Image (cartoon, rainbow, N blue to C red; front, side):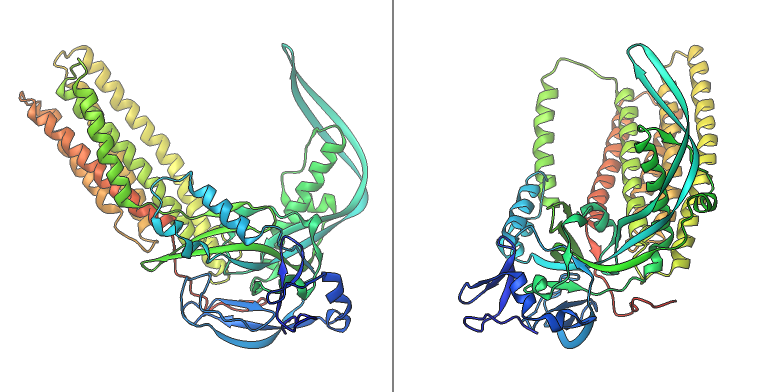
Length: 532
């Protein structure tokens, strides 16, 4: 139901600078309280009427308090008319109104872009900037009761003063109880938890009782995450806040809490939680390119920004070529001489470093695409999420053991070459040692990357890793053969640089892949209490 202007009958929208309703036709202002007083009957209902817009491309659903012309989806960037229907929505309990206007959001975004190099020009164009959309995201806000009780606890405090280090131990007797409030998590499967963490926190001391007038002219997302999703985290957060609060009141000491979670619950008496649905303000900007989307999302209360910023490859390589030419001219004028063998093994080390950086990018993509730490995404079953977490954890443990074994092998290899060097003056031991170590590391990175790539959409990462193995293997053979002609070592250095170039190109492609996301598919998402 649209909010009508009392003067001309036009549509009114919430004006952020004035924190009041404003008519888009005659500029008449109306305070929120005035509208609320004239609609007491509506405010007493548990539901309110909204127009729900569903994207035909991705299935995302947004709602608005009135009928608006919508031809753009904020989640997939699709530019087709959204279907709409009227329905009753659950009335939220509280709302944080927008404090950042669209003009300020655009300015903050433009200022932030200046710190990024090689930004695609489309991200800076006015047409794109005008696509900022204000969306209220549903959040589940929890409260946890801690019964009044007497607690006997131990605590410690360590500090330094002048040249002395102090360690103190305390016995704490406390009578305490109460309610831990303000624990909030986003409750929309459309809204990625990683983005929610980046723009957090919201200041809930500025929230208001929900009134439809606050969302006039804005959109709101749909509640799809069941409250039990965050239940364990909520209780654990409240318990940690309890112990931390006692430590602060006792003079900022470190309270010694039980290690076992069930023992913490027993000691504090925490047993369950209460929850309500609130709406928090977010500015949302979407850029779609070749079947991927990039989001720039801003906290509509504080202005804190999360940005997906891809790299313009043409601009990057243009600057790189210019920088290379300048460095070549500078070094060619410097009176110094480096042995071909030295150039060769230094190039091998740089190839290995570039492979390590590339492997790290693949791991980030793996964690994000499998939603391993996105608890609010109901499209991923908890069984699958927990399985991926256990796999990541067990893999980490295995890597720890293998890492120690790998380190011992490397140490043995280095020790062998150092001892051999004492009895060998040919100058070839270093190059063989470097190529052996870098080859072993490259093989390990190849195995790790191949495992990660199998579970992400883009699966070409093994190619530059394989190229690195071939190049370093050839370098090791040449080092063992120890040819007398320098062009062999120059040739190996060139091959290593080409391997680095392959890593660099792949890194940029995957960086753009990491800073963009698959077009979301919400057609199969279930309701808030899906229970499956």
